[in-house]
Length: 443
Image (tube, rainbow, N blue to C red; front, side, top):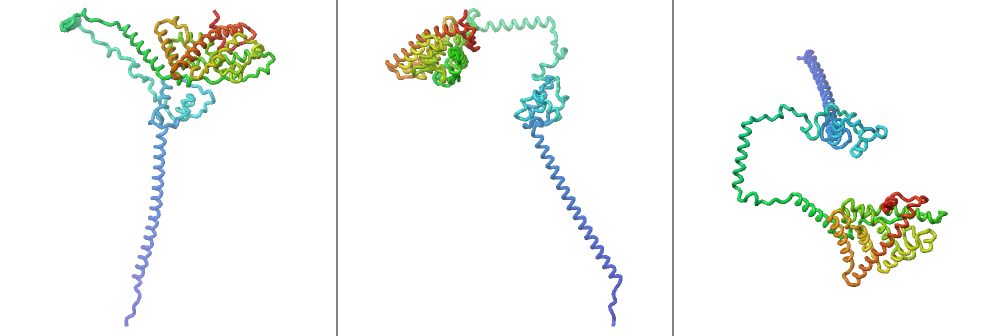
C-alpha cells in the first residue's frame, strides 16, 4: 500500500506564485490609482487652462482703458477705437492735460470724455507705448510728407519739340473751328453773375415758401413764451412808487429776453438780414410789450395785469406815480378789445405782425422789402382765415386790427417818455437789457 507524501518543492512553487500574483495585483492597483490621480490632475489643468484662455479672450474683447468693446491690440494694449485715436492724437499733438480734481477720476465708457488727463494716464498705466505712435504719420496722408525734389522734377522739353507740339495743337484747333455750323459771332453768352444772382433769388424764395407753408398759428402756439411772475410784495416797502418801478423794470427786462428768444423762432424772421432783425426788435419791442400787457388784462376787470401776481388798479396809479394818460390809454384799449372778443389765436398773429411792422423802405435792398411784405401779407391772410368767412366777422377783425395798430402807436410814444425819464434818473437803477433797449432811443 502506497502513501501519498507531500511534494515539498511543488508547494513552495505554488506559494511563490501566489505571492508574485498578489504583488503584481497590488502594483497594478497602485499604478491604476496613480493613473487616475494623474488623469484628474490633467483634467483639472486642462479645465484651468481653458478658463484662462476664455478669460483672456473675454479680456481681449474689452478695452482695458474704458471697458468699451475692443477693436484689437493698439500700441500693445487691447483697446477700443476711441481710446486708440485719443492716445494717438495726444502723442502726435504733444498735448498736455490737467486734471481739475485730484488725478483720480473714474474712466469708463460713459465718463471717458470727462477728464482727458486721467484717461491718458490710464492709457499709460495699462501699457500703451508712446513709441508705438508714428509721429510722421498724420491725418490726410501723403500731403504732409516732405517730397523728394529729385523725383518731382519734370524733365525739360527741347525748344524744337515744344514748338512742334504747339503747331500741331493750333492746327487741330483750326480744323475743329471749320467743322462748326455757326460762326463765332452768332454765339450768345449769358452773364454768369446774373445767372448766379437769379439762382440765389430762387433759392431764397423757395426757403421762404417752406417757412410760411405750414400754418403760422401752429408754430406761434408752439413757441409761446411762459407766463411771467413778479414775486414781489409792495406792502413791505416804505416807498411804494420806487418799489413799483423797480418791480416793473425787472418784469420788463425778463419779458424783453423772452421776446428776443421768441422772435428768433417766428416763421420768416430768420430769412431777414442781421441788420433788419436788429431794426425789427429795436423799433417794435415796446409795442409787443404793451400788446402782451393788454392781452393779459383781457377780459378787463379794473386792473392792468403786468404779471400774474402783479396788478395795478386805477386807485394805485397815483400812488405809484404812473402817468395817468398812459394808464388811461392802456385801459381804453383793454376795454375795446374785450368788447371785440380778442381770441388767443388773433393775439399771437397780431403780435407776430408787430414784429415785422418796420420801416421796410429804409432797407438796403429791394429783396429785403419784398420778403417783409410777403411775411406780413401771409400773417394778415392767416388772421382773416381763422374765422368763418362772413361780412360781420371780416369787419370785426378789420376793426380789431386797425384800432389796435392806432392805439398802440399812441401808447408807445407815452411809454417811451415814461421809461426815458426813469432812465435819466440816477436815483433808480434799471435792469441791463432794458437800459440797452432804451439807449437806442437816445440820439
